[in-house]
Length: 162
Image (tube, rainbow, N blue to C red):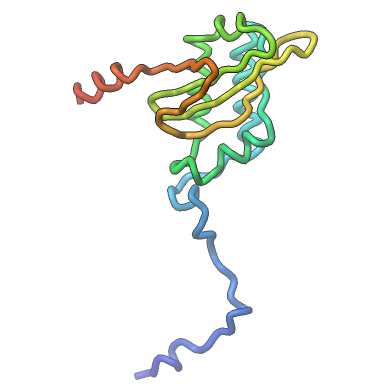
């Protein structure tokens, strides 16, 4: 029988290459981080959706950093972003358009605990909805208007039925 040293020869540390990043939260959860091209696809979808109320959707550079942040605990997915824009348009599309330039508010999806602060800017032709940042956090506090959907009572009723 081989000794331990014979079976596992010494490998110098400087020749070792790690296989994976153990600190990457998204890799731990088995989901992929959102890339710039993923956000471009979400932006294209949101642009088509909000075109009916004269709004163009844009993301800041900070938005891309924050969507993949470890503080979100679970990775924010492309599907969740699409749901956020779809539900917000369904419930608040016309209200957002009437807010006018320089207005600020927060889109809040209670089901997924995603909060997206945005500002409306006038670019000369149409309103730009600039998504400043995004985070997954329960009970998000803000001094701006909070446009929430999926009421907590509705969620409690759904959980009781299961």
